[in-house]
Length: 125
View 1 (cartoon, rainbow, N blue to C red):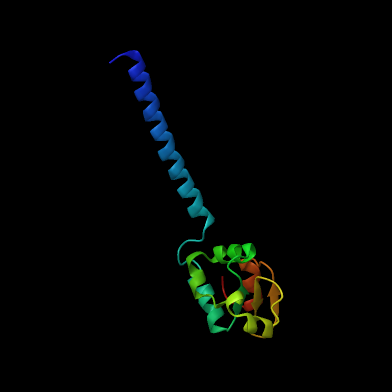
View 2: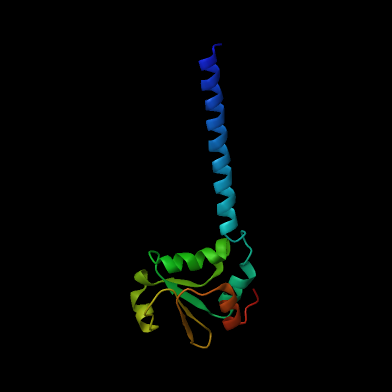
């Protein structure tokens, strides 16, 4: 094997190692960004028990960020997609996304922290 072949093989090995390392690092970073699967199940289920609903739209970036805070637990949050339920959202007075309507009828408009939602709903975080 000549010197140039060894260099090419070495560069190939380094490139493969770099790609694998980058993929591993990105996967690890994405997992840190999202809540652990099921981490907020009880919190989200409390919303359902108390009839607390989030109103939003799939295209709404703030709604997407709000959902992401819950991770896999968002499936338990009562949620209404307003473009598919226009009359209901108009009847509820939804003027912006996301909007949370609490048990007492109070509205929280805009993206909320989990801590704020816990405080306003009395659902344990």
